[in-house]
Structures are given as C-alpha cells and as structure tokens.
Amino acid sequence: MTSPTPVRTPMLTAALALAHREIVRFLRDRSRVTGSLLQPVIFWLLFTGALHGSFKPGGQDYGSYFFVGTLAMIALFTAIFSTITVIEDRKEGFLQGVLVAPVPRAAIALGKILGGTTLGFSLGVLFLLLAPLAGVPLTIGSALLGLAVLYLVALSVTGMGFALAWVMDSTAGYHGIMMLVLMPMLLLSGAFFPMEDAHPLMAWVRWCDPMTYGVGALRHALQEGPVVGIPSFSVCLLGTAIFAVCTFSLSTWVVTRRSARDAV
Image (tube, rainbow, N blue to C red; front, side, top):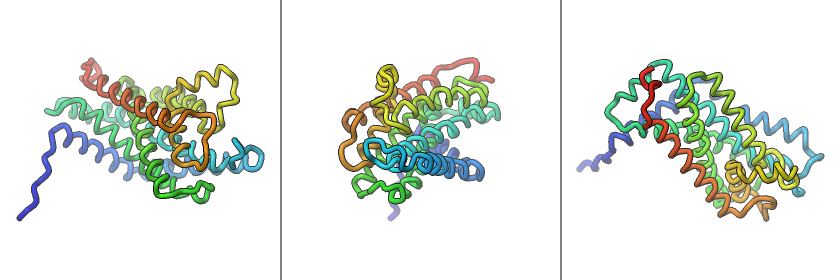
C-alpha cells in the first residue's frame, strides 16, 4: 500500500520551485559561495583582532560581543546578494515567463524570499558552529532559540531586499541603495558597538531601527547573563516579527501591483 501523496497548491508548488532555483543557483556559483562563507569570518577576525584587549563592551570580550553581530551581518549581506537576482531575472526574461504563468503573483515573492532566507539561515548555522572559538557558550536550548531568531531576521531583511529589487532596474543602483540603507541599520543596531552611550540623537534613532530588535533578540538568545542596553527578549522578538510581517506584506504588494515594468 502506497502512502498518500501530499497535496500542494499551485502557489506553494511555484514558490518551492523558485526557492529551489535560488538555492541551486547559489551553490553553482563558486565565487559567491566562497565570498558568502569567508566574508563574515574575515570581518569577525579583523574586528576581534584589532579590538581584542582594548575594548570590552559591558566587560565582555569583544570577540564574543561581535559574534552575535556577525550573525546579523550574514543575514543582511545574504539578503542583498540573493534578492539582486530579481533584477537579473527580469533582464534575462525569466521573470516575464513567471509572471504569465497561471499561478498567483504572490508565489514569486514567497519563493524568492524563502530561497534567500534559507541561504542566509544556512550560512548562519555554519558560522554558529564557531561559537565555542568565540567564547560564546552554547546549549541545545540557546542554539535552537538563536536559530529561530536568526531565521526571522533573515526573513525580514530578505523581504525588504526583494521589495526594493522589484522596483529597480539597475543591479549597481540596487546594490548602492541597499548598502546606503542596510549598513546604517546594522551599525545603529548595536551589532558592532553598544549604542546606549552614543549621542542622544543616535540613541533615539536606534529605537526606530528594526535591526536593533533583531540583534537584541539574538543577544538574549545566545549570551549568558543579563543583556544591558536593549529591551527584553519578548519586546525584541515582537519587534523582529512585526518587521518580518511588514516586509513580507510589502513584497507581496509590489509583486501583485501591475506596472509597465512587467512587460519589459
């Protein structure tokens, strides 16, 4: 007796196919794989080596402090490079073929975002294996909680990247705008340095930065002891979840809105 075949809706089937395509596309590009894996490690090693012994935020070793920020940076950079394929697909004609397929347009957003999120999450998992070397003690509970938060962070920034890529035609322009927007978000989030003693204006602006809550949730999940200078874990998790819902909703809206660009 054969087991029943799971029923998939056309939207889910299309979304999974697009997500699978993004992952295969990434794995076949050796330079992209190498850069994505080594870039965060090099950033972490350089900053940790430069500031080791001279800067201890909250009495904590900087390598441990920046380790959490590097996880957020992995999600952010992966979002940039995974969603830039939206513009490439439009220029190659693949996107126009997907647009005329008999599936909901929201499947495009869902598939692209799931593919980019999976890539960012997978790279984060690999980097998390280096936690003992960074002096970050891990338990099964903290690791699972940290991974859940990391997936939510990756989902939110990938959704934002997709929404921006959909309305742009230039890969160079997209990359420039994303760096202009996302790098300040990362710096203000406390990923690199604590922000509680920053200039009052910067200290206020950071509470409007959604990445502050994502990085804060990661710190609560992975760091031992109390985490000072950021809201509670529940507040950080709620802020990250709201950001993910907003960016996914925005991505779905820009895809379902028909424009002259769809025919280009």
